Length: 249
Image 1 (cartoon, rainbow, N blue to C red):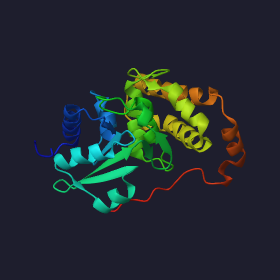
Image 2: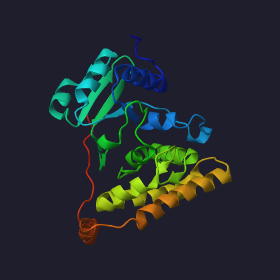
Image 3: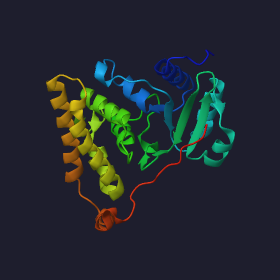
């Protein structure tokens, strides 16, 4: 087996190839996943990647752990023993990098269910979920705005997953959870105002803004359930998000 590669995108692809050889469902998310969906990246949207993030279905943690150990990574033993049903951490000590494995769902400020949306052999989680993992951050940072713009620079909003952001999926998840709706819509609105920060052709900026607004339209049009409406009455008087602790390496 080859050694861990210094280039993070190359390393992500090495691990995906290893997963395919073993028949394991092992999908990238995070910045490297965004990069794999954008073979041509405008210079203003390019950035450095520091860590790798993967998702596996419920019950897939053991297989993922063996794969990463065989690939040269060191497990964070105590953390994995305590949290292994939901999340695993591994380290590339040579390059000072971390690998996160999310089991069944992506859980940070909000929970994004993934297990039923992961396909064997797929390199990444679907674009809808990839976008949601970027937008669920309560204090949205510049790299996540940049990744959001890059996703929508290259992909339309539709009601399916075929090389598109599935707006119906995004809307359905937001319609089930007022807190998620609150964070996602606020961050989409912010991204609309931030598009002009990046040096893109005006036609490209306009296309990204239109796609951001299309997502907002999908979300607003989706019927909201009784639970959503009851939580909406409480609004921001009660915190609607989690504050995940930073894991010490």
